[in-house]
Image (cartoon, rainbow, N blue to C red; front, side, top):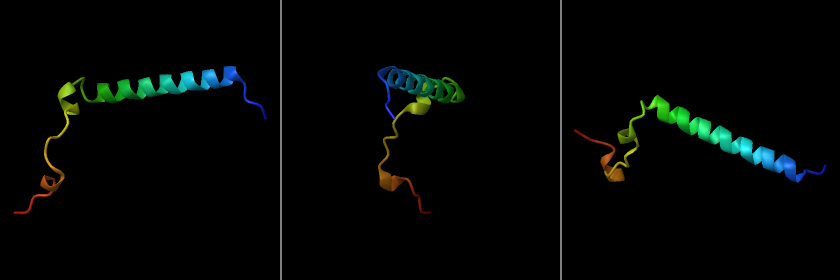
Length: 51
């Protein structure tokens, strides 16, 4: 089976479009809030708290 160049271009473009769609959907589900994407500055050992 031979895969043509046009097929690879169409496949790559469709993956790009699906990726952009999922990214936009995730951003919309966050309420268009950029603060929810801030990197957590806590160290990994501060994740579990013992009291």
